[in-house]
Image 1 (cartoon, rainbow, N blue to C red):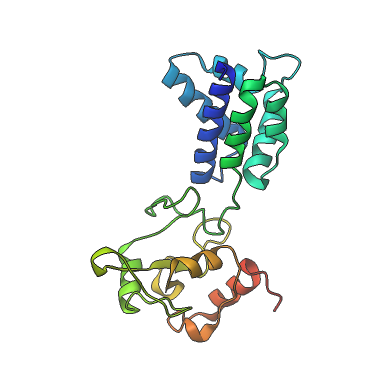
Image 2 (cartoon, rainbow, N blue to C red):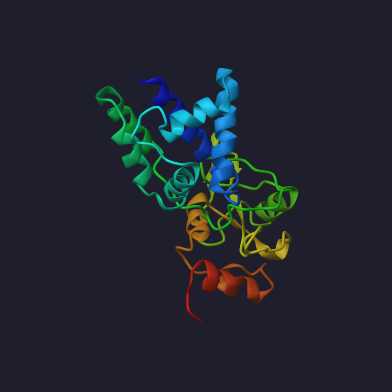
Length: 230
């Protein structure tokens, strides 16, 4: 693989990681942070890595910073193939398969509705895009429900019969939802139902979430997350 493609794919992989952890940042910020990190790891100037990423050593297939950032943003947020197609234009034959494989593996996945959260919330990434919370309050909710999903009623046992469940904020934390982090807004769910809630695939029945005392949280999920017209 050419050095230009090696550097470019390393930067894009890091951009994907940074974007998933900091979706509120601009594409320009994602790119600059990733370029700086790769440059530091190779002990070269950031301009060298940026030149490889922007294609300045492969005329006429070059992009300015703004055009590059627009394609990065479209790739991250919408799964656009414009960035991939542009890189392939300046690829040598032996690099094309590696680029195609990279973009296939890094294909964009929609961000969950609760991906943004307060800085004080603990994060544990179990895939490259899911965020789980295991605060003392979340554990308390799980214990109250005997680690049983409040939607499907199923429980999960891990090794040594250790029960497992996940906590979900009915009205998500962080911008733009700004839901509260207290027990009246937290429910105990299994991973499958948690994914469905995060992506608005299902609406919520108030009868299943008896501990959610404020019906406005239920209405918010059904109208904004699930996008159900009430």
